[in-house]
Image 1: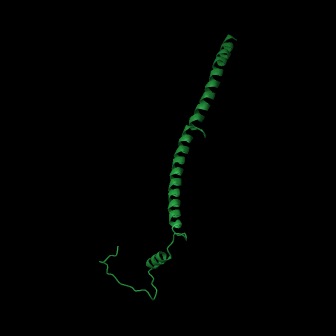
Image 2: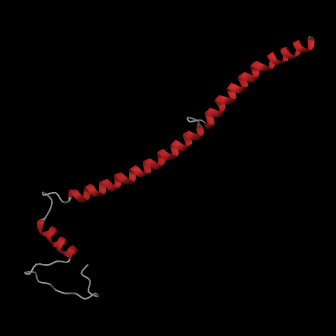
Image 3: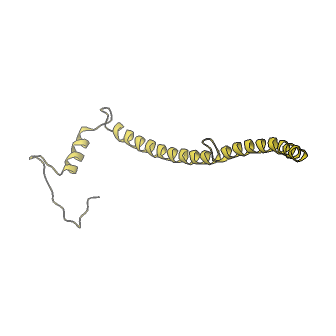
Length: 109
């Protein structure tokens, strides 16, 4: 019987530290590898940086388009200049226009 008591006494002495060690290991693993752990935090930070970069690019493009569109407002727009640029870009002319052909070597601008 003394051997059985000695074994029980040893198991009791080892059981509580083993339980606490297991709990500590569980929380330690979750602190690093879990859904809210350090690894997931680093991944979220990288994703946040990427999204902020994309947002800045989208904002710059939006600002560019706003500048271009604001030039088309009626108060600022010169109808003659718009007509001239539209004809130049579309390569069109009216019958009353005078067309002066230039060679490839003679650049206007």
